[in-house]
Length: 133
Image (cartoon, rainbow, N blue to C red; front, side, top):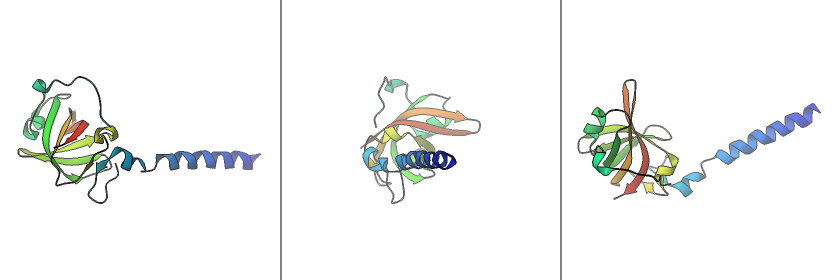
């Protein structure tokens, strides 16, 4: 009986971990600098209210909409990157769906839509959509 329970548990855990995998990267796209692992959000987005530069995003309040154009220059973590435009650099947190099947490299100019996320002493942009320019 114990063996059956242990075997069932092991099979369930291994199935879940295999399903997670990074096989989604090719379907969803992502940032590809040779080591990155990583679809389009829908809804209303008022461009007239959006912050349009990194410098302004760094000074904006929490949940301010952003519309930035520039490049991803570095990957920090699985879904965190450094984004750069003509006014500076900011950390961005990119949801898996935001890639929308695109493959992006450091040489690509992109447009990102999202919102400012102010946490304690850290400002970053939660990216909901990426468009290649």
